[in-house]
Length: 205
Ligand code: GAR
Picture 1 (cartoon, rainbow, N blue to C red):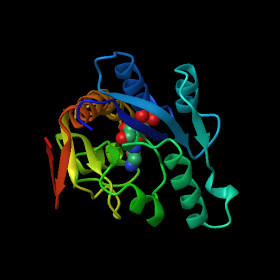
Picture 2 (picture 1 turned 90 degrees about the vertical axis):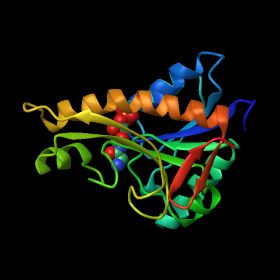
Picture 3 (picture 1 turned 90 degrees about the horizontal axis):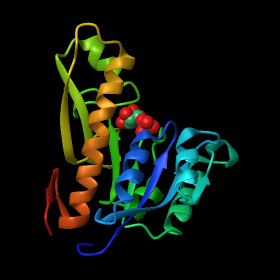
Picture 4 (picture 1 turned 45 degrees about the horizontal axis):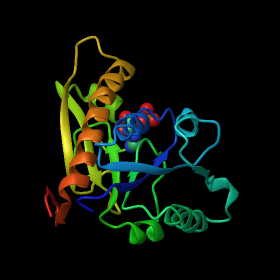
């Protein structure tokens, strides 16, 4: 992928500030990636509005509109495939993808998580870190595997926990760092290529 624009599909479920960071980065022609589509598992979210504002095609696939979870997964796989992405970024997409999707995008499906893996996997990373009393937490960008937030780590960034933090204030500071990490890592992946060797991800061809 080195030397051409990396085609990225972003999956969202909520406010989409990580998506916005990528959209803002791709507005610079020197940034080596482009967001070719944004997919969501629900209607009416800010993430979709952000994509529409940027003129990026969107699609929505709600699990409840399918008879089975695997039918939803197959439809998601087909929709994403229609945009021929090099990389898929799950940025606040609050669904675990299934076997079809993982098989189609093995090694090139990334997820951002608001904790320092392997600590605090799941849906409540900042609240879980706060409750545990850790003094530093942060964010992790990883290559998705079949587990929950367990895949090989692409990048991590540390955020201190403050005495007066709530889960919300901590998450907001993590997200500021997360957006920077995501834009930098996707840029490097596009410019330099990357390899996944067991658990270890390295930039470079
Ligand atoms: C991000 O902090 C992301 O890591 C988190 O949701 C937030 C989405 O923010 N994802 C998870 O917790 C998934 N386990 P955004 O919609 O503003 O980009």
